[in-house]
Length: 233
Ligand SMILES: Nc1ncnc2c1ncn2[C@@H]1O[C@H](COP(=O)(O)OP(=O)(O)OP(=O)(O)O)[C@@H](O)[C@H]1O
Ligand SMILES: [Mg+2]
Image 1 (cartoon, protein in one colour):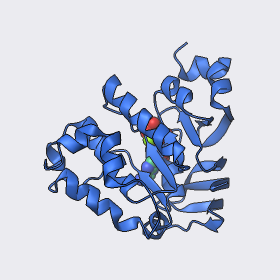
Image 2 (tube, protein in one colour; image 1 turned 45 degrees about the horizontal axis):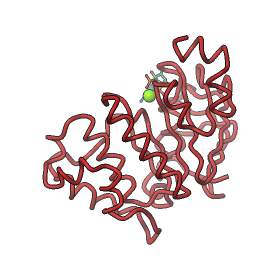
Image 3 (cartoon, helix red, strand yellow; image 1 turned 180 degrees about the vertical axis):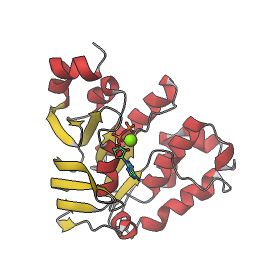
Image 4 (cartoon, helix red, strand yellow; image 1 turned 45 degrees about the vertical axis):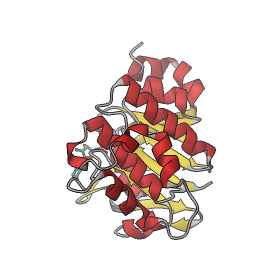
């Protein structure tokens, strides 16, 4: 597996939030994490990226451990996180934001700028616009596009559809499909369990910092407990 997370415990200032999470993502696999607010979804992604301290267990990317505090090195190895809230360079143009994304590429092959603009046509139209003047949804696309410029081998997306119209959400999910076709692994956190379970190959349900359920996404979408808690059925 590209990513192996084993019995991971992690948290903030000594307070444990994740209590032994295990998950994996293979090349070209889309894996979803669903769960309630505060379940620890973002903490899971941030710990995998090396931004939150591990208390126990391990995170292995491409056979090598991920260490806390080395998130730049981790990104250069091809493990990239698009966080909630995007973190763009607001006073730079769309095009310059995309160019900045290539810093982590380290000679890896990946999507070209033209291919990325094909995935997100709105960015091509708005090439010269300042990032901070783009709409929320457009900024979300730019954040994903910029990460793709770094030729990720595993892309982690934290609630990419937040604030997006159904049309833009579809564009983002379509792009995730194209990313998978390239053999890139995707670990995606979504509030919209209904939609993400249609897109994903496998999924994990996180409850209070532990994996409550996991399996094929289609099977989870049919599970009565998942339906009751997360699909509004
Ligand atoms: N920087 C931080 N310092 C202290 N506690 C934090 C910090 N970030 C998150 N937490 C706590 O960790 C727990 C899990 O938060 P996390 O952001 O991982 O949840 P989440 O599943 O992503 O929720 P949401 O769906 O609302 O985004 C929460 O109780 C939260 O208050
Ligand atoms: Mg979150």
